[in-house]
Length: 218
Ligand code: BG6
Ligand code: MG
Image (cartoon, rainbow, N blue to C red; front, top):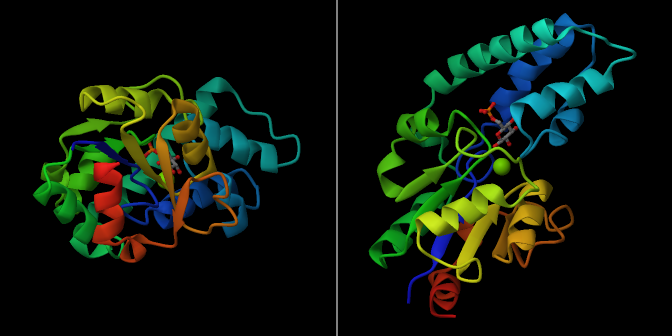
């Protein structure tokens, strides 16, 4: 049988949250806002624009013009891209390659469903762009997770129904999006956080071929 396997990028395939953090921290500090690792959790799966709004909300009465906001968004991405530029395949998270190889060997469509506008360059940097049959990213959708748009477009590209689609996600918003879409949600990360996911694994090394076969043949 054939299913659509949809992967989130940041936090699922690569740990880019640390680079987003460093770039956002610079923005926050320039505005006199304290921004911690804990605050960074709030930004997972969230769009770039919304992330800035959340950071501004962490400050006390920080009011800036639209022009300044746009400037900060550009600055943040420039800083982020400096980190991305140094990435290579050693930054692919444990177990990811094994799962991608297994799905490829079994002719399953592999789709990217990410909020990031930097998805393609990142996949190129870590050398796995060619694994993906289709990419749906922040440039293709208007509604951010938990809106299911990104995953619904992904399933459509793979010619699969939502019921026949499986989503790997590390963010609460992403799991919610997959569930709203009527897809099988698989949380990658802490089960206590991703408690709405249908299945949960700490990372891809815990995902067995038997489990993947079950998903494929269900
Ligand atoms: C998501 C990340 O995948 O993409 C968020 O989890 C990020 O932290 C969002 O803000 C948008 O990414 P980018 O690369 O377009 O700024
Ligand atoms: Mg993510």
